[in-house]
Image 1 (cartoon, rainbow, N blue to C red):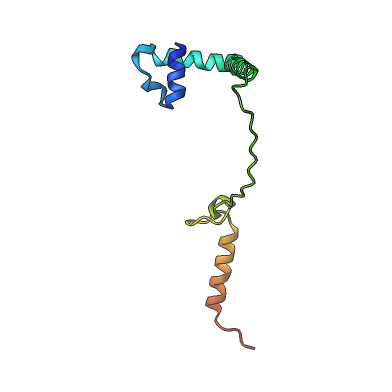
Image 2 (cartoon, rainbow, N blue to C red):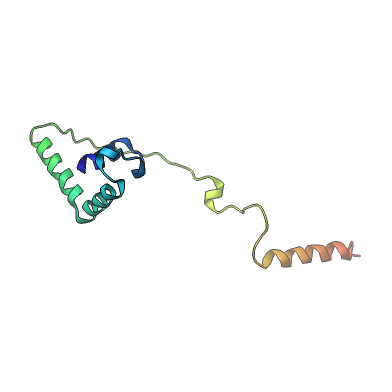
Amino acid sequence: MINGVLWRLRTGAPWRDLPERYGPWQTVYERFVRWEADGTWARLLEQAQVRDDSVGAVEWTVSVDSTISRAHQHAAGARKKGRRRGTNWKIRHVRRLARRWAGPVAG
């Protein structure tokens, strides 16, 4: 069953595409979730890192990236096209129409 989990993690395929030789995908998935919840995967990773680090097989490199990403205007709360919601626009629209109907103001 562990091989099924490792196959899925290596390939990135959906759980439903798990080959039959690993057993029912639901069973493999349930075991994966249970091991994630109880910390088994974290302990395995820690043991592998400690073992590999003790023999010098791990190169600990830190990389800091200062890239700035700008959000698209739609992500920044820009007005959406289509019907407006709320009452303020209705009030402004009626006032605009009233000014138009009133004609030029004599001065």
